[in-house]
Image (tube, rainbow, N blue to C red; front, side):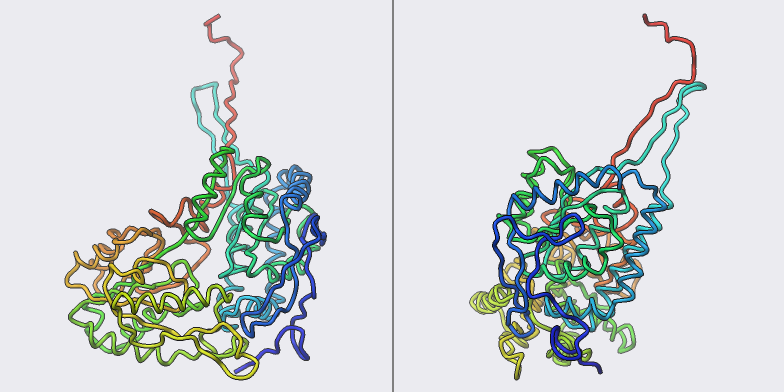
Length: 507
């Protein structure tokens, strides 16, 4: 067990600045309007820094820097860009503990997750796209004996990116790595709930990334996000967040006729077929962990397995074991490596989750475990902690249909394959899903029949760089990760070349 010291305290790996400006053209730049906002840590509810509150003027300044840097960056060789991405990965790896503690303090998630998952995954994404851009090739089509079509990949130019607060660094990297690899300059707006950890990272990388290639403007959605997303000076906008905001982002993009990537909300089903309970073996133990994954990252995951659908013939026994597994989840100091679930990212999110506790009970759902705020001892008493909560109810209830974004799972039973799939697809969303079955045919059929962009089969919450991620239905447009992401940040240039000296004969 390791308990890291809070940032700024004696013995801490991390010292945050008392105030952060925007990161523009490779240096900090004060907000044009001179305004700042407080940034509290969810761990203890206390403000630990102030952050620049940007608006359209700051977005324009960042776009100026990006446009100045874009031509040269776009013309750098794939080899050079790959080297820079690998240097970023190496630098992050050398400071892994430091970055992990910084993000935990700002977001509230357990440091065991930032150490073992968030930051290592971010590092790997940079390395993956460093390799991908080196391996990317154009194509040649032989039209006839003297005519050839060449196809070249070219960067879009300057792109905008807006990231959420649930994975401040990893969600940024999902967008940054392919965009940088493809040769684009970027203006990034972090979530106003978690702006400091990405700025902390920018300082660590300042000598690696050329000035102006990556710019960060902080602020609120309407004041900074909207001017970025609606700017005619960007050639693409990528957004991760709630579905209602995603609709607005798409409208802004449509006005400027630019591509958009939207990774939006979810209400993911996690299906446990009857054969799961055939034996009490390692697989069964793994399935119980799969159920409990609703508490990973405090449930603040767009693919949170927040609907557990359990076959009726194993319902009572499996649910009993799953509740026992949930009771074993240790909540406490997020800086303690033994802590399994930390604090919600903000007080607003805490209040939203607690409101759904009331909504569920009003609808007639039964709380089987949890259902309350968890008030911890000492310095953590004012932190934003919620007990892992299991509801039992019907799929038509709001707690089954609406994204809560907290450590809350709603459980119901099904009878037979067809009902399982019907319940799984009975949602506005289609981002993620889980299928648990020992039978290959059942698992394959379910994976194909579920309307979701990613279906975890006999696992959950794995996010490798080489696996495409994105939603069906109301969960978004486009994909993140995988080689295909290079195409999302590039245009195809076709040179149609004639090597014949003879005219066609039309004129």
